Image (cartoon, rainbow, N blue to C red; front, side, top):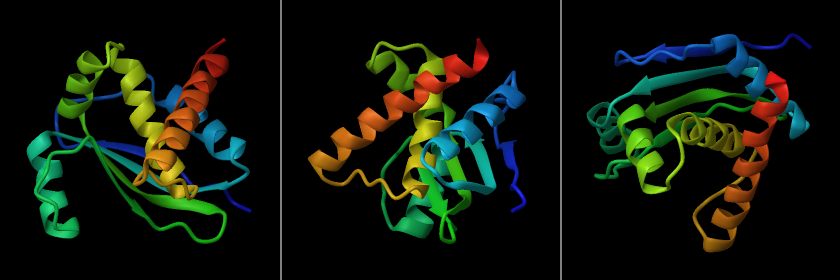
Length: 144
């Protein structure tokens, strides 16, 4: 089976400094869930851009850090993940973590949704947080 691509786009000036490291890490996250990598697009944007998507497609009038559109077929993960860099920066401060760690948490969060993890109930949120932490650690393993 042919592996899809993980792509990064920006609607702001934000750029990942080491895209290849992130692609390798996200591939490891997908494989750790025994899934296959299809085409996954990360679109980095600002609060207003993501608010517009939230209002237009989800009928929610709130700011958020991430919105994912899941096009997964079977075990092949594919979709679009929109991330507000402004929100990630603010959340990093609120949770007393560095920006890179919070960005990886949110990036993993999108993949975990594609894997079927939910975050509506308190129980699901706890499982999602546990999985996010587990996946963030894979980034450091990949870099050693």
